Length: 105
Ligand SMILES: [Zn+2]
Image (cartoon, rainbow, N blue to C red):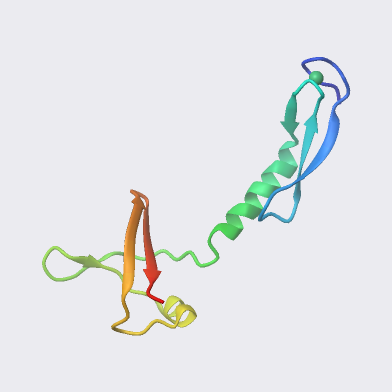
């Protein structure tokens, strides 16, 4: 493969991406040109997405009394975090797409 900028031969470099098992293959040139091989890059992205959230569960928000809303912790979450009634959690809202719950230690 040749560099589209300066026509020198491209160097094949394997890049280890943190959190992914596969390596992304990149072709680089001394002039600074670099491109990723599509397939290996896509594989790395896929692996990272799978790792992103091992426990991703879709739940419905339910209506409580007044204008309050709530949702249930299903048994998977209760078991894996050993939750008990009365336990307190800290709620933070980092942006409009996330609600983060932190358990008191
Ligand atoms: Zn070049």
